[in-house]
Length: 368
Ligand code: NAD
Ligand code: GLY
Image 1 (tube, rainbow, N blue to C red):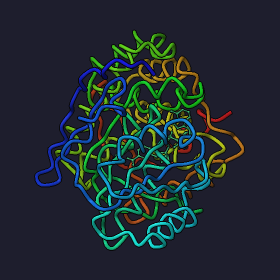
Image 2: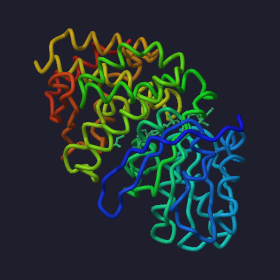
Image 3: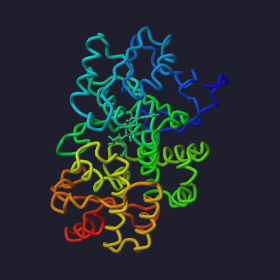
Image 4: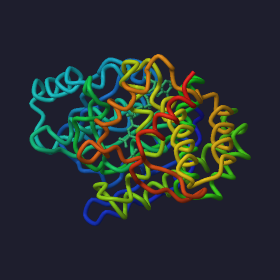
């Protein structure tokens, strides 16, 4: 770490009335005292992380919190999607109770989407809700999961099925931490970056296509733009529909197929972003079968997802019957009818049901 002062953060506001907050994006915002200005001065801070991320960044976050809080506590949950479960949640509650943390205690989620989702859910539940701050350390978490207040754990029958809406007080997204991210995790994060263009911003889709090589090479300027634009687009959607009564569902482009893949294979076998990448190709394919987009759009999505080193075909071993059964558990399903996020044109998404026969054709065409 250099001794120079961190550069001023880019600030992306999330406008949610009294629950409004900012996403701070920049190199070394983690080490900038200004990133913590205005947070409550409670007696206790509890950092929730995992052993991988704690070893890399725990000391830096603790250094910023000490002095602001009388006690800076720490609990690690095991690493991995398979641990986005009751046991990890319980471990956090145990740590909070064992240290007699009161309802003003502030939780800091230091890690990727798994830590963020579990720590956020713990914050939503502990003493009926305590404040929390997201410190996302994966690309996926910086462009998506740390923003918008969805928190959850998985259930063996369905992804993210047990959870709550609970907005963070702030998101501190340090681009420098992405240097240590494994290649596979970078690709998984790119899936959620790719998602925003087709659903909300055709120009951003063009930009991602022309800068994908720079993003894969971790070019800092390209990453900064990708994180900022993704957050701006997500902020607009969440600001308009915080609790997903309609519009917010478009953020789940690729997720209906993707969640089914994750659940079918067992959580952690495919990374979430990998399943979303493949799911976006499948949702594009279904959009084309419904006559919403030309086949050329499906090929465009397939090319882009493949260039991001993500899978473009689901495992044939899942089979159409199991696929459909798992998708019926999707949170967007209504009365057992699956509602897909489909593309009408680059930059414009729609949510609707599709005939079972077409869904099965998509599964057959996009499995290998
Ligand atoms: P993850 O949290 O499992 O992190 C990926 C891996 O990278 C882990 O092994 C982690 O320890 C490691 N890691 C994290 N930061 C690192 C760093 N800087 N350097 C080196 N290693 C690092 O996975 P993810 O892709 O961040 O998150 C996926 C989860 O996010 C899924 O459970 C998904 O459902 C959830 N999600 C939630 C939302 C939401 O709105 N709440 C949105 C999208 C995804
Ligand atoms: N990642 C989907 C959402 O935040 O709504």
